[in-house]
Image (cartoon, rainbow over all chains, first blue to last red; front, side, top):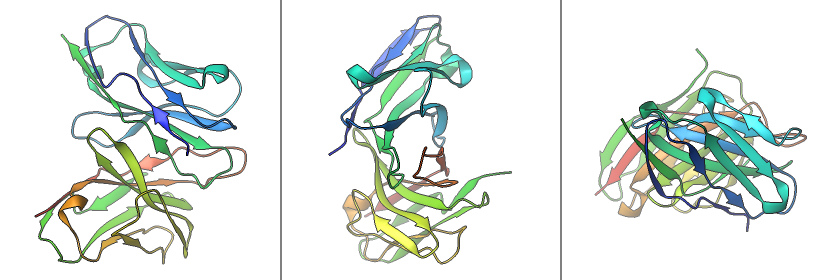
Length: 114
Length: 116
């Protein structure tokens, strides 16, 4: 069965530090990839998505992610985090042409210290 | 404003008392879905609907029912809730899915359900 793994469950950084959150998926076919963010007490919001084309995807709020097909990875990066980036981050994948089901990773809680 | 709404936002109930969580979207989306979020497990899909009168099971459908009589509404029904259904529930919708790409899913604000 298709699965998504996020290796970092809880990350603590100081403001201005660089961020990289790992995400690996198991499906070998064509996939669509997403990163969602959930700020405390709020619903999920889309940070960025990859469907095809340039494997380096830029999203909102200075986030970017790189799709590396050979490694089945879609890691999220940000050069300099801010306190307001404190949130839970979810990687998700859906198969090309499938039922639309999003398969989520377990989530990574990011805490940014001011 | 384009949005997905859910009601209620918070609910405490007792084992066995039937309840319905409503979900509505105003974006004319074809696809709607329900997820539950549990600590350490991320979000798991309960049911989804590709269009009106078309629904199917997700990964964790046991104990839940859904219906899609209108395009905008996709209620989640717990006929006989049990404590293991205590969770945070999210409804989501997207324009459509399948084909060359899957469209972004928009999420509702969540419903926190506690079953005692």
